[in-house]
Image (cartoon, rainbow, N blue to C red; front, side, top):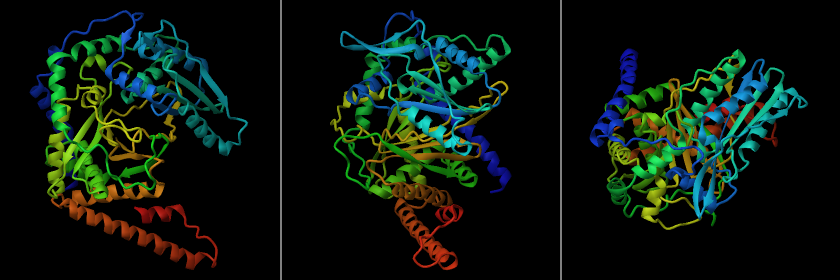
Length: 524
């Protein structure tokens, strides 16, 4: 295929995704007009928890004081920062969004949302100028990680912290930490855009150009509780009961250490990047099979898990935004829902066939995505085991939000990445489209896995995708053999590199010191 035809096919993929979504809406007869009106309540009236909030509130009671459900992000601000203007901008966002003034308290044994009329956010400042200049970035990363690990008290708002790390007069790192119960990834994108708009207004002594919000998060929670009742709820639960009947409760992944009696949340992340060429081929395969990029990546993830476990009945999870109505789109709050995806890999299907099966499973799940994960767990009553999460222990998330290119007035803005060292499940593959490539990382639980095992798994995922797009009619058993050969070749290449470096550069008895670039070449 020529470069021109390939680019045209890739461009058409977004249209294909829209057509799939439109078809799904028509099948469900879902449009804003078919949904009930959302009444606007008074902020000072306690509201019930939304179903997503209820799930996290229950988990907090189960494991109090955990930071596993914190959401953290950091950006580096270069230039003449007005700290007071930034602090006032943070206050403006808190006044604008009720979720950021919310605490969750128990009234007569039931949790409710209580929204404070006023809620001050203090921007804490750490001056790192006393630290040696070459060590400041590492110290900022340590402090950001430390901040992200601090738990919240859900009964005492605000469930938001802001910390500013001063590297020098013109370099700062802003660290934001929120509890997931009032925020999600979509919300963080809103937060960044509105913070920049409010800061520009402060700097230029004018009102920020932000649209009026149609409602607030407590209004959504009240609406969800009224809307998801009766036959709508019964039919959704009936579908999921059929779909998950006799599903395996635990993914039989080989672990480096025995599973502890109580699930821990200490984790790490191994970075993953798929090159432009592979990303383009994945999109072309998706279009050929009337699927989305997510469906093809999910098929690859399931094939990888099948290779490691031998299981043909696989259950993994994913996230959906949960913002079916336009009124929800500009709100900061916790809307995201978890979907349970159960796929049959029996009969040694080809990868192409697996994509088709995955497509069917995903579309059916999307058609019933309004059933909250919390209600599903309550309804199915899976055996409660403190050593692993119910229904699924592995998840794939493909962030498809538009690029959040925040521009602060008079400042340069760049992401400031740091690892939170938290794992909510055994494995979570977090991916996003960045330009023409797919990047992200595999988050894993340190109680179960060594870093080397996860590195091999990540390399195996890329090897599998490369083989699958080259020959999509290859059976899964053959893909497994290709993975094993690739792993042996990579290991052999590493041993050969060590021998060569030992002969050429090192004296006998000394440790081998191999340049990182050479190691990366072998591991690719």
